[in-house]
Image (cartoon, rainbow, N blue to C red):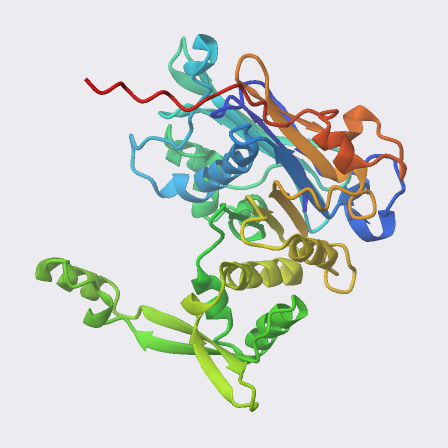
Length: 428
């Protein structure tokens, strides 16, 4: 479960920005929208958070930052020496344009609190650290920091951190994380940290996720039943699903691709399965009629795409981030998805959902707590600033959040200038 995420100097984010899933002191919707953490020092955490802001304000950038952190954790140990890291600093300030990007996450795994972070330029990791709190008191397990003058790293390891530390240190390249390298070399102590990024964190872009994830789930009978029940609960009129499995063959490769490339593709994917999804509706006479998934509406296709990751998230108690959740979905469907997260019945394992949206229908104190609502806007330096609704101290249960937001009281709205259609050039 996620406690907080902090990022500095990444794309439109210049200064340190933190998204916190720690609940504020208010008791509204506490039974449904919050849960108690399972570590030695329990605190109340949020099941969901929504982020509002104008186009190009930096909403997506915040989610992308956590995605880039995840990517570096998962892949850096297997990259080649000299390969560039996927970080982009804030370029509209000379001081930050050449400085490192910083990421840090605080999260829980099996009742243990971890605080892990690193700083990086495109060419190297400049700093990396880990604090672990197995019994409520933080233990500083390791720190790594690049010293420019000596052109070398300064390392600091705690006696409480067990394993082949010297071997892992020597094996860590400049553009790789010590965490990732140590886990690749069988560090059991660091495996929970790596596995949280690898298995517990799922981030979907504005285009959703490929239908393949859900389609693969539907190959198993019970998972297919879960997906179908989810779609039907969302008022999608589908009687059944059919998943057709074909082995990857020449017919799946576009004709315009040269024969030598086709041969390479076929040879490199000998066991690849191609899945075709069919939806089944009943006609007026009660007979099943089959449709291609591509023939369904945008909303139905997107909901099918989301079904697999969302069900997986709820079952495993994972953290799911979705950019622009509102795309092709009716506001009532967004509310439906939130209800799933806010129920102990459908969410017994404390899964969390964080999403960006322009859908203001849920900007309501009967749906969300005040601490679940966040805003992003750019300042005069064109740098993104993230802040919670609680900064404005709206009155519990009394203020109309939607009206106040649209009235500009919380900021994070687009500001339009005057414009007119340019006059056509006079004919000569």
